[in-house]
Length: 106
Image (cartoon, rainbow, N blue to C red; front, side):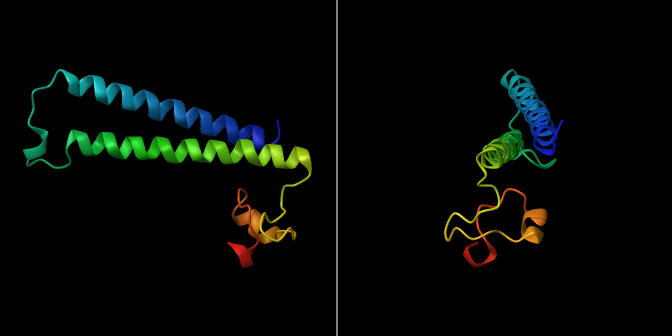
């Protein structure tokens, strides 16, 4: 299993857990008649759902990045700036493996 396989597996696992949490939170709040907008105890259920939805969206984008990175490796285009076509510095790729631009075009 290579780096991209491991990362894809980890991200897919995280996405599955987040989506399951979202389903559970939504189901739990459907039968509740709580006035969560005026609850003095803290964050509202709606706020929690939105935060979870945002986490799901970020995780989906990360999964897209992993899949795209794997395709770029396969085509020989990984590490090439999309703007200028120059090689992206190894240090930048190490810090940001999914980057598509050199530091000058970031």
